Length: 252
Image (tube, rainbow, N blue to C red):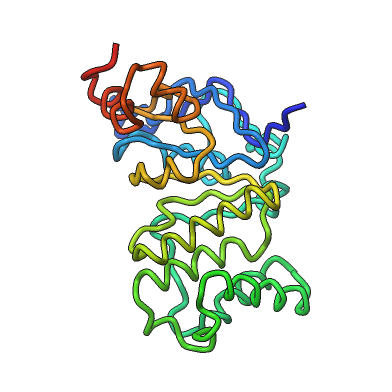
């Protein structure tokens, strides 16, 4: 039986700007994401991707509809969800005066992970992201890409059942991005963890994602495996599907 990690029913989020003006950020979103999937959220800026993630982690309250994460209603059981879900926002901050290792230990310690276990996880993640040799360096001297790798590792230190990554390889060089993608693949394939990521890199989507959802102006306009969407919309590749759905050009 499929194990649904995320399920939304008619999920809608409206922001009020003044008494007479409303912005519909999400409209009637019906979506399911299964355990162990790498699910890509695609859409132009302002399409609703970040809003959807913020609703699913309890940072925003839906205006209408339902959202369930790990089988729990996000409006009723958010404390349960937050101990099992990690979020790496695009604008995530880092403690620059701490070392790479200290950033991981500090964050994991807030979740009550025992010291021995926390150190074991930090050792493993620092090895995977290629920063073991620089683990005792303050991150203020790191490049943007190195800081981003520390942030990805920090999100994973709690070993979440579900992790949301907003542009995880932003600012990371080609080799570093490969390291991050391989780590995410391993989490999905070997540890059955569920990953939801947003990205503008369609090569990354093709390499990583089992399925994708395309958002446009708050509407979920397509969901499926990349090759299935290409066949459905008679497109040569995912970029054609995405461009056609967002602009209305070339999609029948």
